[in-house]
Image 1 (cartoon, rainbow, N blue to C red):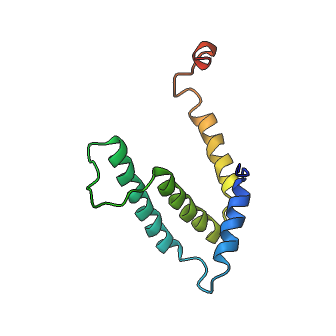
Image 2 (cartoon, helix red, strand yellow; image 1 turned 90 degrees about the horizontal axis):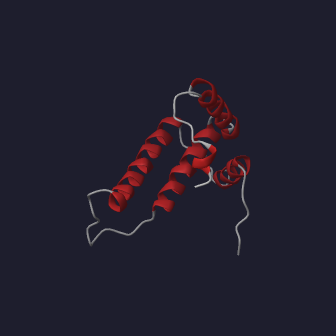
Length: 116
């Protein structure tokens, strides 16, 4: 079964529909920032286990980097939704910033580099 690709708007709507089922609703922005930090720490731990010098203990649960990225994305979407921020628009703003401010900052690949 092939999963349907979802736009960021669809992701934000899906998360909002999920959270809207509960009386508690979204956590406060400060609480979500704490959760975002917690999830980032869990992602860092997994990356350190896979690519760093700190192997997992035999008693530690096996988690995938993909799952930790998903947790981080979920909380980020919750934060954006609670603040009425359209993440597609936020992304476009940032990409415009990088395309203008940093347009000559990095060494561009040549056409030959891209075909490799």
